[in-house]
Length: 187
Image 1 (tube, rainbow, N blue to C red):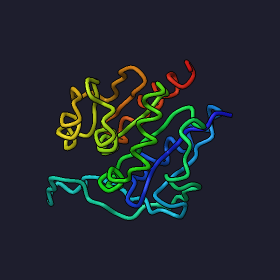
Image 2 (image 1 turned 120 degrees about the horizontal axis):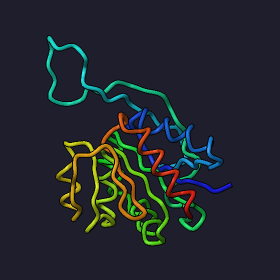
Image 3 (image 1 turned 30 degrees about the vertical axis):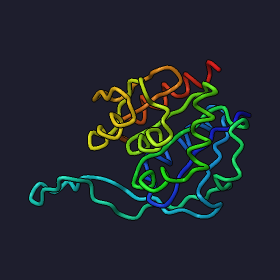
């Protein structure tokens, strides 16, 4: 069975992560979770609180589930993977500085393998310099990150450009996964 790399760290968004984590095996793929270290990581829930009496401009963060990384970024061989799924949450804010993750991301993208990215995951793609000239989407508050990476940001649920499929938030998981699986099946 083909393996899909899922890089993450503490504060990965739960729905960004767990929906593809369980959906991809339904199509016969093995999801390999990687992190800065092979250990247990904490997910979070990001949501604008539904109480209109207390308005919020940004999402509130609450603890979520835990997920274990089987491998450290430094031990990942990009050739072993058919594709990559990059989750959002706050994790990409610090993961984008990991030189091993950036190497892996560039190698997978340069090989033309399918890469899916949701929400703040765009920060990793920008740091790896793999979205220059691409048409992408992401959560609106990361539009500048996409533009700084040289991409054309559009506010659409899911965007496919070559081997890259991007989505705004976990609300777009269905269309994101449909397109990502379609790309994987074409390889």
